[in-house]
Amino acid sequence: MANQFTCTECNFLNCQTRDSEFPRKCLTTAEGNNAVLQQSLDVYDNDRSVNKIMLAAAQVEGQYYGQLTRVEEIIVFAKKIGAKKIGIASCAGLIQENRIFASILRANDLDVFGVLCKVGAQDKCSVGIEDRDKIKPGRYEAMCNPVMQANLCNKEKTDLNVISGLCVGHDSLFMKQSDAPVTYLIVKDRVLAHNPIGALNTGHSYYKRLLDGVKLNEADEKAALSHRQ
Ligand code: SF4
Image 1 (tube, rainbow, N blue to C red):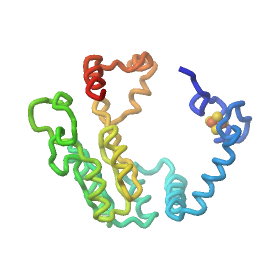
Image 2 (cartoon, helix red, strand yellow):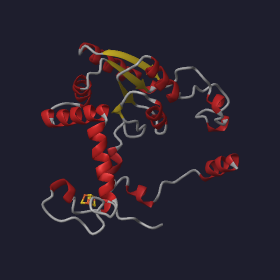
Image 3 (cartoon, rainbow, N blue to C red):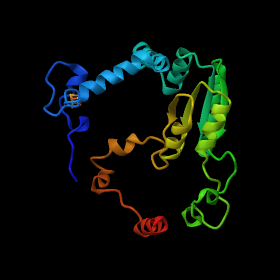
Image 4 (tube, rainbow, N blue to C red):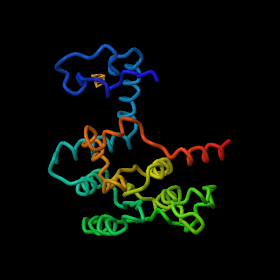
């Protein structure tokens, strides 16, 4: 597999500091990328909703750097963009934490619309998921319903939606479907107590095996492939 030089391979990071030099294949100076830069700057300039979020995010960072938890940063950010009603797209497994989060938002004069991932009460098989792909096949297993979560937030006209523990992929669908801007509170990691960076912090030791490639369950992969063909 050809490995393209990108920012993750760069040791200069001169875009951040501008006190050294740009590497030969830098994404800032690469041919054609100046046009992309200009297009991007135009978006910040001309799209008012983007501009508002950009300024608010910078203010949260600049005014409270290293002082606020993410819960607090979300509240400050919400106020800075003028959000009144906050959607919480909650994982069922984190409902206790999200009840506390909802109370905190209310205590800070924000309206809350919380919607659980299992909303709609549909069995996984109702959208074509194979029974064998359930955690426990052979019985009702509620599907996560991120599209409905987003649609309900859209119906409620939430101003800002917060993903709190949605699964990988379900979060992608929620973000794709949401009318309001989306930020994250909790990134789900069932193994690392929702602290995915733990795998990277120990990537030189306990989680070194990840560098050998993630081991897939071959039988399940074959079955999934044959189903698609
Ligand atoms: S933009 Fe250029 S200098 Fe910045 S990290 Fe990427 S390659 Fe390095």
